[in-house]
Amino acid sequence: MNHPYQFLLPLLSLFWIRVDLTDLMALEMQVQILNIRDGDTLTVKSGSQSFHVRLSRIDAPELHQNFHDSKIDAGIVSRNCLRKLSPQKTILRIEGFDIYHRILGDVGGLNYQAVENGCSGLYPHAQFSSVSEKILYVKALMDARKKRRGVWAYRGYMLPKKWRKISKRNGYRPSPQRAHSRVTYRPERIRARKEY
Image (cartoon, helix red, strand yellow):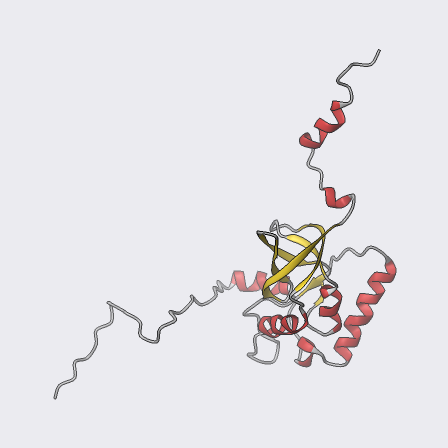
């Protein structure tokens, strides 16, 4: 004889074991792009909720990361390149979450366009849905490098993961935000008096 509550056990197991429902199927929703933070991270809004989205399969240089041979900020070049490509409203396809709890997904095909136009490179450990999709991304990357588009117009940049590790070791901290006004109050600074 079956126990009357036997059907509840599989449902309760969902609460005991963390299940990521995006493993079963990708979720899609209409979003509005609010801000592009860097070459692979966006802030989007759906309804009244806004959240950060990390574009899957791509890896762009970090802000304040320079190219190899120049003092030009590779992160800003990558971000500006992505801003030119991004539409105002699009479809977000959620594929999972990254280690920083950001949504990992594809925003209206922007991931492939970023690689194709040289806004970013490929993430070394990217997971593709098929071999043909991987070949498509690799061909787009090779073509962008060959034609020197976007960030590839410069000499090249260090892998962002390696750059973060080195800059953390060297104690790199981004400069603090400056006040909007040209006049700043500094009580510790003694001003010289003008004598007439």
